[in-house]
Length: 347
Image (cartoon, rainbow, N blue to C red; front, top):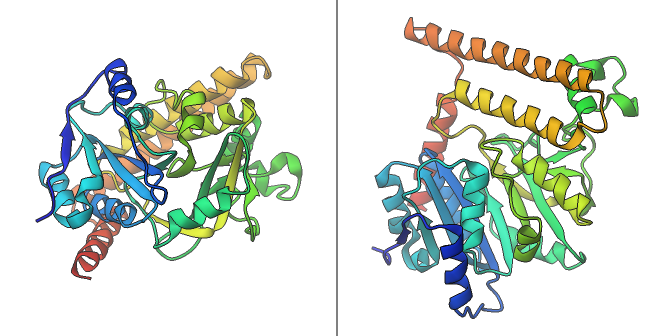
């Protein structure tokens, strides 16, 4: 049995910052990274993700912000961590405050020189943090980087590297105008994963919030994630604000990070609604002075129409499943993740 994990009840931002200010921290030279993972009913993948981070020698601590999980899943983390349990820290008791607020809660108590935001269903290979830090030696000022997110079948995942998200690029995506002129610069898709993959560290306008490494002070200078985004688009907003501040965003193609999407056992219709609200908020917050309001109104309507169609599809699948038909949901993926988790424990 490993050392007991530290459980922390919710604190105010002022209290957390005061704790940091009053506690001297001596950072080992080889361990400079604070990993923050925000989990909401993630299931068995949470343990594998946390273990993959704890086993990186450059990781000083792994901070799990528990927005909602089964008690046994959190307790299991300590048992599996073994000798690394001293580096594990769980913040709990605050309920589901959203992804952006969860990242900020973890970042407020982070002690490392570098902050690594990692999704609870993302698995780091051996040496991943070392390789990313090595790449970062060439960077100056405020920077952020992410590795190449890959699917379980080894293909690059959509969202791993992205172009700027603007009202026009969203309109092109939703209306599928890219099919008419796929090579025209005005009709390029938001996600760039189908383009030839770079062979070296490359500046990229947007990377995924599933994997973000940066100096801790950079995160704090950008003022963290915007907590008005409950779920989705907060990473796109963060990249935009960092670049407006003069910072740079980079894609590291030689570090593969396995990412299981949609592992959280939550209401998928509710997730679609959250995503639509965040998307519309992003457009009106950043582009209301650059685009005609009528265009933003039309775009907002298209977002809601798309959300309605996806919600109808989800509810239709549920109805079929209730009637005895096997709908193509994420259940098979969760079973596969559970099998992978079991195999990793036996190693």
